[in-house]
Image (tube, rainbow, N blue to C red):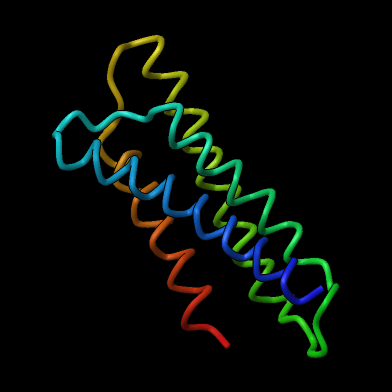
Length: 117
């Protein structure tokens, strides 16, 4: 059971890496737009994170406050990606604050996972 949980953690990290990596590519290229790759990264990280939130294969108590904060941040990122993609389709541009907020929130979510015990 522990190996399966570690595999899900790996998938969760891959989802984060896909989301953040796609964001960094757009930031470095100066395009500042949301892509489908970001959506896929968010979806992978979300599904794996929800699976990890279930108390299976562990002998310790889960920190549900931490999980709740991470879920709220994940939902905000998803909302920003959805609204931003809609604006991109409609106007062809994206507000810079929205773009940078996704990067900062994604990094904050990873920081919370690592630092908050």
